[in-house]
Length: 615
Image 1 (cartoon, rainbow, N blue to C red):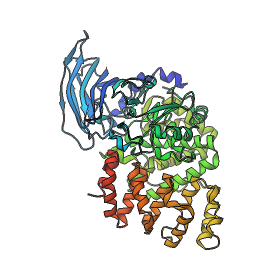
Image 2: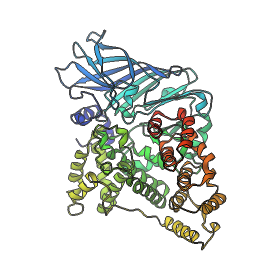
Image 3: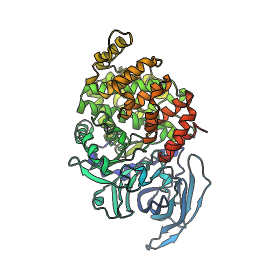
Image 4: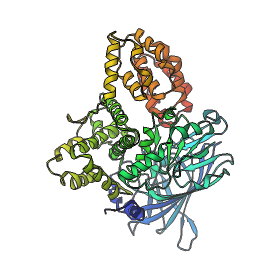
């Protein structure tokens, strides 16, 4: 069904989500029996118990039976303790249901099979999460910025929602949800929903998400959170120590929304607020609708890293509105989002900055392609039972973005913009897989303008390994000047004072460091460090680039600062490659010592990745 406006899509979220369930059987990572029964709404009633590191209460499922003969519903769980399950009879009374919790699978968790005497409109699962829940992190007051109150937050993508909610945990389905969350009185809770009830901190909060979303977008956070608006549509929740800095850093968020509305249609989610998380958050951001979760590592003081906000905002169209049906189709989510992100940055900050960011990301992709197994460089990735967290690399993000940039360059931006907007409109509040997208692409772009891009070329991008020979290779005139000055300095034809670094952006610094010879002489590293204080930089991205060079090159002066870097943040992008490089260059003992100290403050997702290095 093609929708003419986002507004009309909102009225049809339930019917659209149900109509797409036929593809659910393709999701190898869910036990859910969507062909028989579908949850259309969930209500959560949970207490946050910081002492026990547990969520305790029940989830109520409103059911739509697809098979009129079935009396069984299968939910996904992982490391949950089930107390009892009730179903609601036609007279409104509640009765116990029988159930079986299967043995735990390392990837998928435990299959929860619920058997009913008759089809019911609603069931309730009474349960509690465990401290080991992969989708929750519990922080002591000492591990937070304010040091006064504990903090808890969720990370449900890809299949971690099942570790704190018994649910049909597949992106092929969508639910609306409501919640009552109780906390200690001095703790504020927020969710990926309407947060208008949380302005008063009283320990009892109500939430409602009226638009249907996939389960991985259900999110919760709780801690010493204050609130301040940036515009009529945007606000920030954060610990007091970082609130004002975050407001200043992300003040262009409303401008980003306004520009994207003009390009791709009206923002469909009401408000767009940000939750600033503790430094342990393992990602740059998480696009939870209405409330993106953001790492503090992008608060640089100069708006140099706000492309992350553009990325999470872009998910409001790509990912949240139009969703990948399985995790093998992740590129449909992240490739489109990376493309839209860059378009937002161009509109708000100019073409030069957008091209610099493209160039840096493509360089990162090309480096990562050298280390990834060839089958994992295919856009339509085959996981073959592996954890869907393995799908997250530069490939779905940047190769996906380059494919769309290739189409834009071939067809022209005027035609491609119309295609993208109509794509978002046509699949609003639906999930689709790669095959369905290829058909839509052929019908609405390739065949519509014949002789420009062949079906064979589309297949090469999506189903073949590596990058096509004619892939876009964005080059920045700004970077060409940096390269020229760098070569002159390396040859001794100029000195560091002549590089013009006083006016450099973060992007120029990253390009400069990343293009230094990997075997650069130690005395030249000392010169750079003395002149620019790179070891002591407070910009997390620059620090990462410098430390990666220094570890590989044996520059010993960085280690006290590197210890502080690894201990102070938990963002996987900025720590995992460093641990790997340390192990590779005979610093495993030192790295393990640092990790043992830092590990309690890392998210379980980061712990799981790094643990394997030291086994």
